[in-house]
Image (cartoon, rainbow, N blue to C red; front, side, top):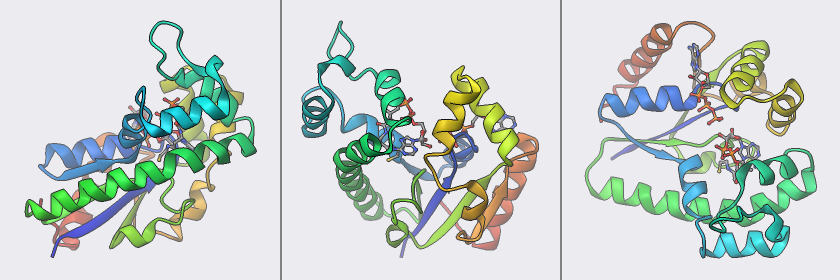
Length: 201
Ligand SMILES: CC(C)(COP(=O)(O)OP(=O)(O)OC[C@H]1O[C@@H](n2cnc3c(N)ncnc32)[C@H](O)[C@@H]1O)[C@@H](O)C(=O)NCCC(=O)NCCS
Ligand SMILES: Nc1ncnc2c1ncn2[C@@H]1O[C@H](COP(=O)(O)OP(=O)(O)OP(=O)(O)O)[C@@H](O)[C@H]1O
């Protein structure tokens, strides 16, 4: 029986950093952010529904792809619009991720990691056997997000505020990785969990 791990945290808390470590160790990672990009490629049902809801002004002029910065500006400043976007994108993301998980199970993987930023917000824990939260304190989260995305403090804060407070997620997790320190310290914590839970790729 394969073990399905839910990897979550907050925006810019270090989920991709941890999932890259897992990929390097040979584990299978299914990434919700990646799936969310695939289901909104030009012409896909979710893409058409977004254009219908938000209008053509959120498209890039050159190739009609979604202008993510523009759409992000709208949905991270307006909860109603964010819920509308979630209502379009999330069912398609879930469908794609579940089929990728089934394929990974069929191909005999022992452990399958589902990297899902909104695992708790969207009540998706039924999809996984155990959860790991990648935690950072709020100052570190804000400064890493501003640095990575070249966001102002206001842009970064509005994105952080659209998720459950990261502190609350600690109490919901089976294991927590504290990513305030160095990358090496984070990798040591990850290895300890993989060993304790006896998880092989
Ligand atoms: C709004 C969009 C276009 C902004 O795109 P952008 O390239 O700037 O960000 P990206 O997709 O890389 O997401 C970065 C991070 O933002 C956070 N985030 C993204 N969408 C949401 C959301 N709806 N609610 C809360 N946080 C979110 C997550 O932590 C995610 O890891 C995009 O995030 C999107 O389509 N979001 C809706 C789908 C979604 O919820 N994706 C998250 C996982 S399913
Ligand atoms: N231990 C660390 N020390 C210093 N910088 C780090 C550390 N961990 C991650 N970072 C940096 O912080 C930023 C956020 O990390 P990462 O992209 O892994 O977060 P994420 O949780 O996947 O974010 P998102 O939810 O937006 O996809 C990145 O620029 C990354 O390089």
